[in-house]
Structures are given as C-alpha cells and as structure tokens.
Image 1 (tube, rainbow, N blue to C red):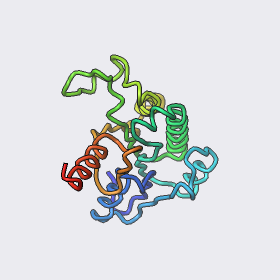
Image 2: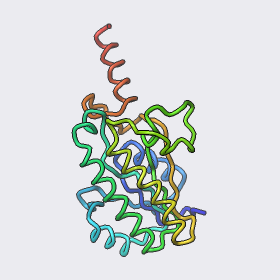
Image 3: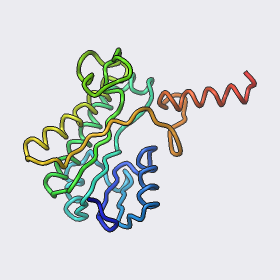
Image 4: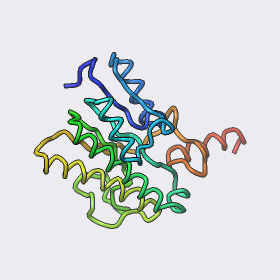
Length: 199
C-alpha cells in the first residue's frame, strides 16, 4: 500500500505520462514525490542511477522515462531507441532491486504487440508474430522491460516489478511536432491544421 508520505520517484516527469502522473499524485495528497530532470540525472548512467537510489531511497518508482518519438524518428534511429531505452530500464530495474524499492511500475507501449495483432488486442498476443518494422527498436526495448519485470519477480521471488501497457495516449505535455509525434497527436495536428485552413 502506497501511503501519502511514501517516498515516490517518478522517472520521466516532464513527458505526457509522467506529468499527468505527477499531477494526479499531488492532487491526491502524496507529499514526497521526487523528480529529476535529465540534466540532473542521466538514467543511462549506471553509477549516477545507483548514487541517486542510494541517497534518495525511493519506496515506489514509476518508470515513465525513455526515448520516445514518432514514426519518422523511430525509422531513422532504431538503434538509438533500442540502446537508450534498454540502458534506462536496466539501470533503474537493477537499482530498484538493490535498494529494495517496494514496487516499480514500468510503462510499456502498445507497439509491443504484433503488427497484425487480432483486434481487440489481448495480452496473450504479445510475441506471437512480427512487430511493426518502423518501431521495432523501441518496441523491442519495451518488450525487454516487460520481460525484465517477470524475470526480477521470478529470480527474487517477489511481485514488486509490475508492467503496464497503456494504449495510445494524448494530452497536456504531449509532443505535437508533426515530424516526431505519435499517431494520435499527429492526427490532432492534422485536424487542427485542416480546421485553421478551412479544409
């Protein structure tokens, strides 16, 4: 049970998901929520992550941080998406285990499901056929995070690592740059542009 005075760390607090989570936690009276900007804590740096967890000792971690982008960016930089996200996940998961975090909630992505997944999508469709090629690097990293939750729980005989796969999202603090945004934000941009141009 997460208490109002529990020490909470939200990684990725400036993005769409993280900022919404921060807002809800504060609205509900959680008083010890910690955040760190990327300039303050590089989650791809193992030593920095371990120092942060050692000093801060968070009880609950919400892992919203990661390299995210739209189709063009994912298609152009698949290795960057794969490497950066796996590094973040690896460092945060290992620090959470070492410093005995009570629960870590990892946010996956709906792109982890197969390209031609039956609809509506069910959890059991994960890893049943090929991914969408344009987001394969990012999706593979997110799949690694989901499997890491299972692996840490199994090896350490715990249930502290939880994976959640939200569906497509949009809202405040989303990226609405048409070159790098996700599908829903891109659609909203196009609708907005059409409205302005009376199309």
